[in-house]
Image (cartoon, rainbow, N blue to C red; front, top):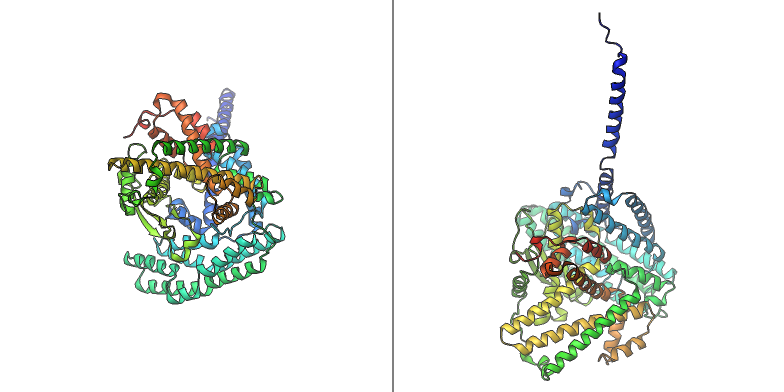
Length: 626
């Protein structure tokens, strides 16, 4: 009888080899794509944590969180505190360390680029730990006392869950504003409280943005916009009539018993903090103000150029624009008189809708088409862009809002978009046309929708959605705004108004010179410590002789450090990148190819964009228009 209970000696070596192969295969399977899996795990967790930590951010990033694996969350309006900033620092340091351990050559090109962006972003963010109380969340021009209500007013109701989330956030506004007051109190103890004049403006906003009278009369914009949204959802069958009635009652209750007292408490607390001895001055007047400004400049613009180099870049552009203005003025002696005439003020288009349509038509051929949101295999023409509603800013917010702004569409819902126009600035004619180029097509709206759809179509890592680069976004908006001036000039030529076309070119160069000058003043005030009198002397050289005008310019720049640079330095970085593309691509270069490259890269810092450009070769189908 044959015994099968032991292995004969002649089979021993093959068995050992098999075991070795099995062990090696196990190790291979364990390590295969280790870096890719680790990167995917880190970014997925980071994205999910970011989304659930702020329901407001999640709502404006994702229309339907369940499609991104987020099924359960508690609606939360994050509390503002130095402690939370420190916790964020620790988390950023751990994430950066984990990202450094991942070998970029083991990732796809897309993920490797995302890793680079994340590392640079985290490394710069880690510097903010030295400046906990330098940030100003209650800035007079862009603070949360006004921005939060705009975000709440535009909070889209797609589902019943959106309504209940919204009401839950509204119910947390008292805790949120209380945390802001505590932060301001801590800033005061650290000797970094905002100037008395700025604090007084914020207090005035708190007293006027939400009033008992408007709530009693039912005219506050958080009542009227809620009614519009809840009625639309009810008509669509998302909620019943009875549910709509209950939600309206709850909204009114929360506005009167939570939001209004929250603003009153914040205003009273700020009044007690006000210190008349604190003057309006730039960051350079603070102990580590210059160092904080260097960090903030990178954070806001995405440019890593040394400040001295930025100044040289700005001064060269200032001279260029100055000479362009002189040249145009010299070529036509009557141009200044024409600029102030009633005939020049008449623009062929008067309505925002027809201006947007004209911009869509003219941009075709120079900018890539948008991928279809519903069917990634189809490409729509630029003329078939998603819808946009142009709304006016509520009168109660006009004093505290920008002249115009676009609210970014979620990653997975780009069909409906909103542009706000602040009618207090009375934009019309050429100004409205170029504003819509900046905010709409081919500006923020087009750029955002393109990026979202391109990312979805190509399966880009969703972590890219939480990376923000002011220079990339606002620099692009200024870049295409100036293209909008060129389009407007072409319109005038088509109507045989050649002198008016020249006037528009003069206005374009004047706008550029103004932004360039203000960017230089930003550096002077916040990095070099320039006083109001020094700034006023500079402004006098450029025709700003009225003290009130000079004071207004100085005040805005002093209260909003790096804001002008976010726009104009971003614009100059794009021009520099464009010049480099022309040099590298040679005959293969076209504006269409460059715009495609820039948009396909997505929001990035300019060091990373330049590195990406050095590795790029324009494909045949991206060097000319469709």
